[in-house]
Image (cartoon, rainbow, N blue to C red):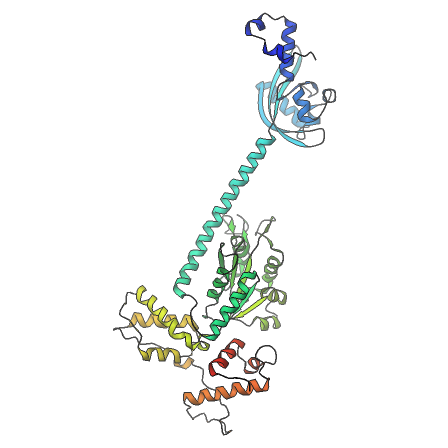
Length: 497
């Protein structure tokens, strides 16, 4: 091809251009085509390339000689005989087409391009000139914008779900109160929380219903490095069997009857935070393997979708069941039990925290007075004695209900409690100081009952050489939690001789 210097090009004026000879105009046109930043390809109706400019060679990585003689099909991964015929008929009819396509480079890389094709007819021959622009940068930006938009949508949806879950949690927590008390048993629990919270280890919280296991879970989360993210709660006992997978892992629209839209599961919402599995012992055995996989690998798939999702979730589980016995009975997977039970934490019953009852009761009284507009309600000394003497089979939850009911039904500032005395634990027959068995008809004073309890605990401690925890320990012998035994030992002032 002929060339034109940059100086010559810049010195051309409109007047001098009109005065140019045909050969000079051709040289100028050739210079313009060759120095155009866009690819220009001239080809015939079969797609055979007849001429190209320098930009084409640069974009595709071929020399001019290598390109001439190739066909459009050789450099276009989507073009074949059938699609070419359809394309050419369309171009012949419209004379001009603009579209996006892909081209192969000499190295085999596929690059996106924007093409404007123009139909030309010389005599009986049909040709086309295609102007193509590499839009890789633009496509990359569009993809990044799309990804950013999708991420914003995902985060917005996740935030909406977090707010929904957290609203429910706050309502429950405000009603239930916060961890409070001065008992040795509670202080022991708080020390364990302080120990495990920063580690990120899975925790299994056990204890009777109503003891405040969820409050303990929140305290662990709030003292952990994940406290900036939410703690999401799942009540495993309230989920219908057929919805467990959807609840935990989410589903896509149409995955099953009733799946009218996509749903984000609790594991995904809790990503980066904590998932609290309340009543974990209620999960059906055949679904426990899927939960185990998430705990082991941190991956899962939504129901109806094969795409694997990765999450980073700390799991805190709670149950009022004896999971070890459930494992022995074949109702709970052993490997899942050990995965959850990295750090066991047992919450003592309220009857084992007698020192805390008046503190908690006063807290619930203040809440009830405010909620039910009964500012005059107050405890008498006898009220507190009755509360501390009751066995509380329903624990803190029962205490709250009793106080609320008393405040609602009170006709004066004086409160009257409706306590189910039949639920109190009755003392078992036990040897007296004289060695005689107690008669069923004999009524013991509280002092006598306490003395029997003291002697029984001392006997267990002597028999186990003052070993409290573990197998063959005094707690196991007495069939009570070790934390409960430790509390009673401290309260009674028992010491090894």
